[in-house]
Image 1 (cartoon, rainbow, N blue to C red):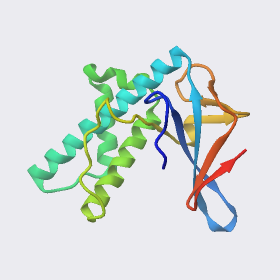
Image 2 (image 1 turned 90 degrees about the vertical axis):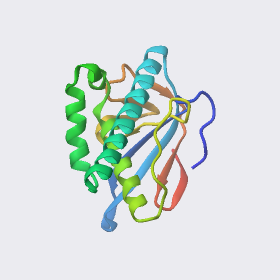
Image 3 (image 1 turned 45 degrees about the vertical axis):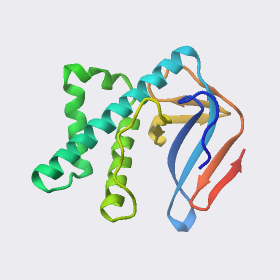
Image 4 (image 1 turned 60 degrees about the vertical axis):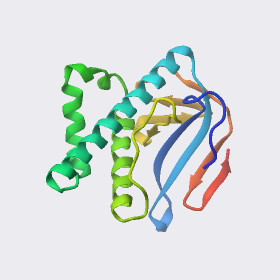
Length: 177
């Protein structure tokens, strides 16, 4: 995937959704478009990126500690329950202010990364930094795109975006609308 240009963190809104396509079964499609958030929307997106980073780092630390203490890996269901417990902690109450979908997607991405590591297809996942590339994944239930207007869950108003977007399928990137 090409690296986004422009301001870090706000350059692209990456959203994924499952689309049923004829007899071939589910096809994973990703919409990628350039978004131009207002200052209020930018604050919500920055908060979302920060929450994703906190969830990723705390979950990775817990997985690491459990593997070294017990010699067992952690399943996605266990990390999902831990996320629910994290949201109940008073010092992490800010996790409830953002959409839960990107937080759950982060757990799924981490589970995939750990599976690839143990299968010796990838290296050990790294902790996330605020200085690196910021991204969030939204599933079909957390976004709506109509007429070039992008609406994200728990984000106020419509995110202004350019009218052209790219669609990804398993075959690669192609132009769309």
